[in-house]
Length: 219
Image (cartoon, rainbow, N blue to C red; front, side):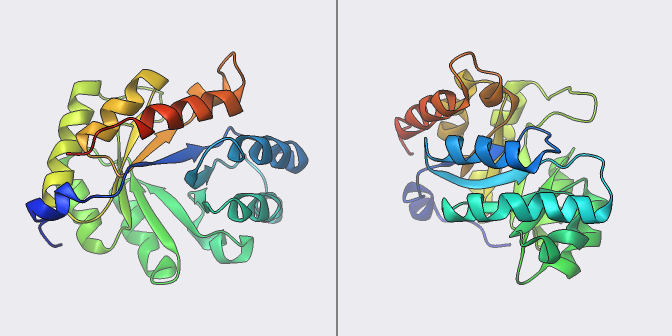
């Protein structure tokens, strides 16, 4: 991995949104939901959370979502299931845990995106990057719903953005965290439940998050 020069750090692109879907098994509901929300703001990628279905059911669900997501200009990533990416028409997969990342890379690269999450240590993040992950994610909840302390997430993102070229995604638990993640150096800010459960509706919530991100002053 290549160290990031200070002048490159100063010229980094503005951070973009990364949307994590709700868990949905109904394709038509998913399409309507995504179509409305993605029209509200610029989104770089959508992470599709898949329910417990058989392989054909998962592929069909992803195939239903893919045109809507890709038409908006976003990449469609499957949450796990790297073996289904090509058949589902997706752009890549998000893998949780270093072992899952390492196991999936050869099947995804170079044509598909391989994202890395669930990285518990700096060492895990570095190994994932060196192995070929296209991005690393920090701050997302674990399988029990617990997240690292937010100051620790900001510190991890600051460290990564100052040292490495590979993009990082910072997970925002609520709208108040969006701008701080962008200022810390996140290339993408991930939003999930806080968007879908916002009383204003997900489209309005996403538009508000995009506005907060647009106000971030880059270092």
